[in-house]
Image (cartoon, rainbow, N blue to C red; front, side, top):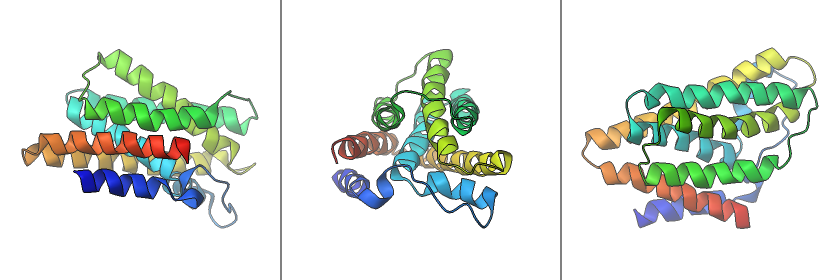
Length: 190
């Protein structure tokens, strides 16, 4: 488990991939939307952590947490594309990595409405970053791309967490959450 935390921490220290980015939107807006969350360590870590938290919580959280994040992310993307300013977008994205990782590490079983509210708040900020950095035209195709990639990352976190739980390695899923939180702190201070 120490190797996992060190690996996640090392990946987080890669400055060129760490934070959200402005990409080339020339070829396909859908592909550009897919690549945005996949190209930033901050987005990958937070989105996988949503899935991990959903997996260790189980029940209705398996679908409610990811859907809450994606729905708010799309709303945030629209706000960003319209040029509306949200204060503290990057600090909130970094906070999401740490706090979602901690929630997964603690296997915190928050009331469903509270958990969905937390992931939705963070999703709004992730979406705002993607909408602000996205193309001026073609928001629907671009948004569909980043929603697809986000759902895939949530699915990866859920599959990882459920797989480890099924193998009776429950502590491993929680360790991944802790590693995510540590990686978020590394990004914060990098």
